[in-house]
Amino acid sequence: MNRPLTKIILIIFIVILLPLIGFTVYQLSSISENEEVLQEIYSNQLESILFSVNQHSDDVVSSWAGTVERHLLSSGQTSEKLRQFTNDFPPIEGVFLLSYVDRSTPVFQTLSPSIDEKTISARITEVLRENSGAVSKLEGYFKSGFRKIESLEIKDDNNLIILLFAVRGDGKENSLAGLVVNKRSFISEVISRRIGRAAGDKFTLAVLSDARDSIVYSNFPVKAAEIDRKKELWVLKGYSLGISLKGETLSEAISERGKRNLYILLLINLLFISGIILVLINIRRQIRLAQIKSDFVSNVSHELRTPLALITMFAETLETGRVKGEDKVKEYYQIISAEANRLSKIVNSILNFSQMESGKRRYSFRETSLNELVEKVAETYTFHLKNKGFQFHMNLSPGLPAVSADPDAVSEATINLIDNAMKYSNEVKEIVVSTGVVGKMVFISVKDKGVGIAAGEIRQIFDKFYRVTSGLTHNTKGTGLGLTIVKHIIDAHKGKIEVKSTPGEGSEFILFLPQR
Ligand code: ADP
Image 1 (cartoon, rainbow, N blue to C red):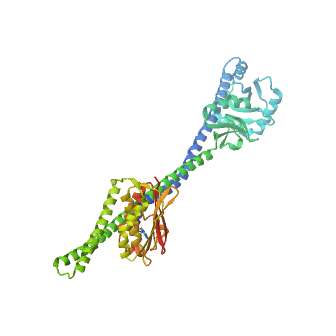
Image 2 (image 1 turned 90 degrees about the horizontal axis):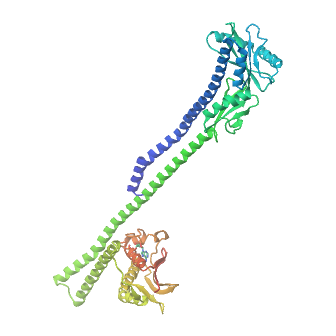
Image 3 (image 1 turned 180 degrees about the vertical axis):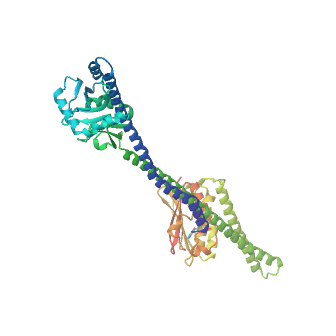
């Protein structure tokens, strides 16, 4: 690889690739970090939603306890007021009082007619006995100014639950009061409303039965296994509140987000790297062109210097008048004329090329016979070819159809090919020029038995200034413009060029032109 390109690659690596690699590594590590932060934020959000539902249920029950105490303390029809109170709040099935001293006999102030008083009393007594420790603490809390509400499950009863709390009794003494609460109704009347408000349409909130690990209520259909986070329900023993992100689980949502970020990152990297590759290819092409141009300048200088030196030398010798004999003088003039021709050929090809490059070259098409054209070229070249020791054959196909072409331009292309065949022939000096028809195309072929061209080079030899820099070609001077001009001419005729070549054996260049 050449030095300027290595330098550019190094600069690109330091200025673009290194920061890109750093950025990618940083982003990759922060994707998982972000995931953790998001997970934490979500967890906190879930916790606070669960807390708000729990808090609300607790507030409702506390307000019920306050109302019960107020009715107990007020004068007059206490039972009547409490019955009215239970009617207003459907989840409450009954209210009872208990003395601290005799906890075994709940005295019902009101009870729903659907519940048998004796059975429920017996069950309450049993529950109180089983939870005597917790019950005892209620008075202690109350004395220190805080009313704790104890939720007590009734064995063998799926429907009812007891909420027990301390109150100031009518004798101005503390006593215990209890609410018999219908769990289903509590969930559907109290908890569900709060859930609706707290969850919005982004979360699924559910009440789960701990014993059965099943959903009792949820704002959207959900399975117990899909619940992300659970918290026990303070006011309903044996039940929990559960929450999950609607539609997908939390971790799915986060990992989906992480994946998306990763893909975007990969895409950015891919775009960057493709951009860099494109830039490098372009730079490489420009560097090569610059190198080729500088080779061109040195080649052309050399090409011009040799004939100029010869012309100067022979002209000066003639000037001195010391050349002896007519023949010698004639020979010197011939050399001067040949070298002047060579000079004008080089200058012409450079001028032609520059005209083509600026789009100024114009072609004048007319009906042309390729056989005649080749014969004319051969006429002017045969002497030169024979002089250089070449065997020259013509193989012209009779009855060749005419083509619409610029004869000067096609002659120039053919001469360039014959010139190359001469330049790139080594020991076997044999050139065959043929014409013929293939399909709708008429062709001129120039075949030599010279050095040939490697398969990998064939595509490039038509590029401007391109010269093969190995083997014999290396020592043969040229401008690298001959074939570029040929291609331009043939393209302008809507024709095509075919090259068949085997290194060491020879080459054949075929110019195809469309029939008229
Ligand atoms: P130039 O002959 O001035 O170098 P051209 O554009 O005519 O430029 O040719 C480009 C390259 O193609 C040459 O340098 C040579 O390597 C290769 N080439 C062209 N014609 C032949 C041929 N007949 N045999 C072998 N190589 C050839």
